Length: 564
Image (cartoon, rainbow, N blue to C red; front, side, top):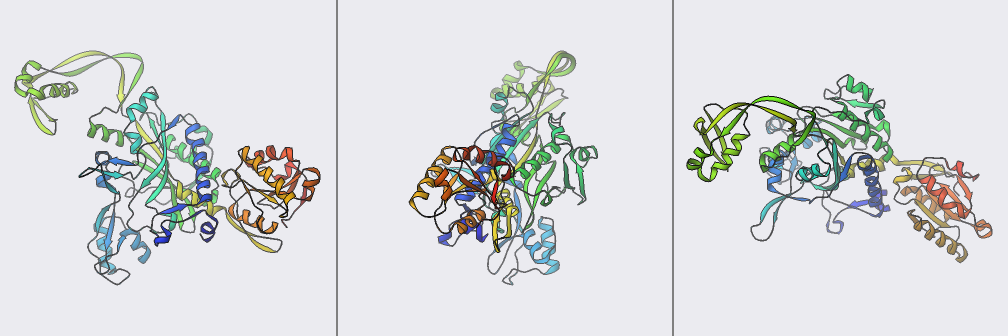
């Protein structure tokens, strides 16, 4: 963390005012790394899926979160000290003080506090635990305004315009909609730096599917990948994804496909496979909208940290928004050939409904027509009022209809990525120390395509003839789309160490031979090996190296094996 702050990866927000837990600033290098991560994510989950990317507001009106369940279910249990007034998230505080996993319910927390006589850090007693909603509340508009919330996830911004998105895909399932953006959770007591933030970056894919067909055409691409799974009973499995589906460890092929694709993405981003696992949520920890969920977890200095959640949200979200908005969010699935079916149908009598129910008659008739059967009476809710309609106002007939298809509410598979946690995990997994020329060296072994600074151009000496050529080459590399920095400060050895520490894959050095024949050296961060190439070959050589994991030796003769 000291290195990340000092070198400009990230630091605490509002530093000059004492800081505030749960908020961080990305410096120049951290922002560059996260942007590279976002581009890699788009390559995996937008470009190479039947998916599109949208962008929606970070503020949502209250009705959205009532329908989604966040207004009532998105809570943690908090405990407040009677003496000092500090508030803690109960399950985290109990885990830290007693090393006990406790169910996040008021009753369970109350029992642990009583049994262990648990007190605050100031020795004060705790008030009774209570639920705290994690959404930031706000007002939209002047004066009294309209109640709203900062979104706790980007997903709802995808569900709300579902009809328009379905039209865009011509109502052909499956299709995916993605969004990258900020989300907000008013954590009770955020700790662990970047691991638990109040404002954070998400990348989410909502993959809409026919509930009768939870398969993926590209499953075979990942089916034979071996993966470490921890099921909801804490049993560990090292199996292929195909075996995981066949044995029922993972519920269905589509969920397994996104587990596999997520693993490949994380490895490509720079996480180490032996520090990566997928853990299934226990029945009592799943979110209110999920029927099954697997977390990608990375092993860090904070322990196993959840970095991705892959959930089967079923039809929860679209059904709830249909119910609360009154809009039909179903999709019509046509049959290959129409079929004839006999069905019972409720036929309203407008002649009788009109005089009695007046302005409500049309709505009642429409609601009756949607029923497939009815008895002596039906109860309907019209404009928030319950209305009892007896059989004298309708009749039930059996009719034969030609059916060309059916309406279904799609199910949703959601891989949700915490970009801040992934960014931090990449940095931790990349951080290394070795010895070069008898001295300890700190080095970030980032994947070349992830590095925020790809190339450093270094004149061997701070003399005009060296600096002139170095600046020319820097300009050429930048124009070629290679993120390049120029540095002439300090000894060449010190500059190499500086760029090793921030993860720059290659340094280009302008030396005496450059002035003679125009050739330059390329130094590899990981091995410290150097090759000499002609200036006209520099850009194509670097581009090929940066987009691959090829050894530098493939591109030239090694002339010096150390970095001095």
